[in-house]
Image 1 (tube, rainbow, N blue to C red):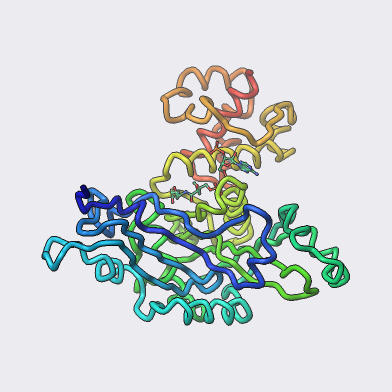
Image 2 (cartoon, rainbow, N blue to C red):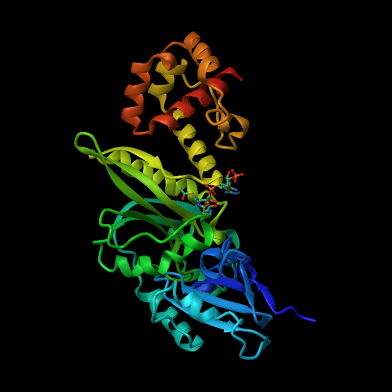
Length: 379
Ligand code: ACO
C-alpha cells in the first residue's frame, strides 16, 4: 500500500542536455543527465516531501549551454482532486522563469539549435584544460572519422571562465535560469536581488570540440560564483564571494579549485579591488579555499623565502586535515605567537600586514593560513 508521499530530492531529476552530435563526443560513462538536488526545502517546504503521487518523477532539463528549461511531471497514480495533493508544476514554476518547454520534441529541437548558436556572454578572464576522457577519442571511431580528427584539439577539453555583471548583454535572463542551482545545492542559499546593481559573477563553461570536426566547439555550463563589491576605505572595493556552485556531474575533478583560482587571479589583476572575503562558507568550500590559498602561498617563492626560510614545505594539494581547522579550533594565539617568535617574520605584524595587503587576502583567513604554514613547517 502506498502512503502517496514522495521524497522531493529523489523525485526531482535534473539533466544538462547536449545535442545528439555532442553526446556522441562523450566518453563511456561520461554523463550529465539524471542527477538530483541536495536540497528542495526552499521550494517544496521544510520536510522535502511531496504528497499525492505514486512513482513521482519530476523531469527538469536544461539545455547544456543556454540553460533553457524543459519541465515534465510524471507519475503512475495521482490521488483524486484532494486539496492536499501538492501542485508540483505550479510550485516549481514559481522558481524558474516562464516560457520553459513542456513539449519534449520541441525542447530537443531547441537543444540542437542551441548547440550551434550558444556562446557565453561576458569577458573571458581565464581558461584551462583537462585531458579528453580517453574513451571519448576512441568511442565509435571509424576509419572515416580518423581522417577528420584534428589531433591537436582532441587532446584537451578547454574550460573557460567569464566575468559578467547585470549590464552584460542577455545576462539577466541567463541568471534567472541558473539561479535555481543555488537553492538546490547551497544550504541556506537564496535568490539575490536583480535590482541591486553591483553584483558581479564568474561563470565556468566547458568548451568541447565535437569529435570528427576541425572547429565545431560547443559550450556547456559547469558552475558559477556570485560576488558582491563593498566599499573599502578610502577608495577601493572589497569583493565578497557570496555564492559558489559546481554542478554535481563536474564535482571532484578540481573545477571548484580552478574557478576559485580564476576569481583570485582576477582580483589580483584589478587595482581597485583591495581584498577577497567569503560570506558564510560551507565546510566543503572552506576546505577548498584553504587548500588553494595554501598551495598559492607555498609556491610563492619570495613569501616563503622571507617568512619561512625557503620552500621547505612540500604540499601536494591534498587535504589539509586537522591543520586546516587551526584557526577555528582556537589554536594559534599564545602557542602560535611563541612558535612564530622563533621564526622571525611570521610574528612581525608589519611584515604580515604588508604581505596580506599585497596578496589581497582577508585578515582572518590570512592569519589562519600563516598559522597553518607554521604548523606544516613544524611537522
Ligand atoms: N579526481 C578526484 N578527486 C579530485 C580531483 C580529481 N581529479 N580533483 C580534486 N579532487 C577532490 C579534491 O581533493 C577535493 O577532495 P575533498 O572533498 O576530499 O577535500 C574534492 O575533489 C573537491 O575539490 P574540487 O574538485 O576542486 O571542488 P569541486 O569542483 O568538487 O567543488 C564545491 C567543490 C564547490 C564545494 C562543490 O562540491 C559544490 O558546488 N557543492 C555544492 C554547493 C556548495 O556547497 N557550495 C559552497 C557554498 S559556500 C559559498 O557559496 C560561499
